[in-house]
Length: 131
Image 1 (cartoon, one colour):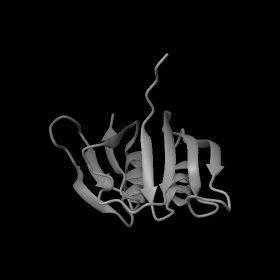
Image 2: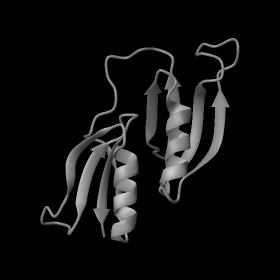
Image 3: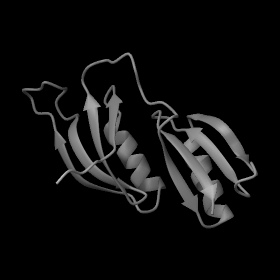
Image 4: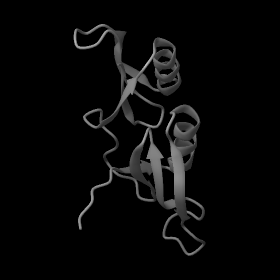
C-alpha cells in the first residue's frame, strides 16, 4: 500500500512553535506524535526529527531541518480552509496572518462571498474561504 502525506520542513527550529500555533488556532488540529533529535544529533538536540500531526483534519508530517536550504515554503502550496461563518473567518484570517503577509485581502472575488489568502509567520500559506 502507498500513502501520501504532506511534509512540512521548517528551518531554524521553528517546527514546534508552528505546530503549537496551529493546534491553538485552527479547529480540528492536534499533535499525534513527536520524535526529537537526541544529543548525538545530527540535528540540534530537542529539535523535531519527525512529528505526525493533524491540521484542520489533514494529516501532515513535520520536520526541523538542521541544514540551511536555499528554498523555503511557497504560496503555490497552501492549506485551503472552508469556514462556516463570518466571525470564524475573521478570527482565523487575523490570527494566521499576524506576523505574516496578506497575499489576497479578504474580499468577494466572484467565486466566494469572502475569500482571503495569506502566508503565516512560519511561511505556510493559507486560503480562507467563507463557505
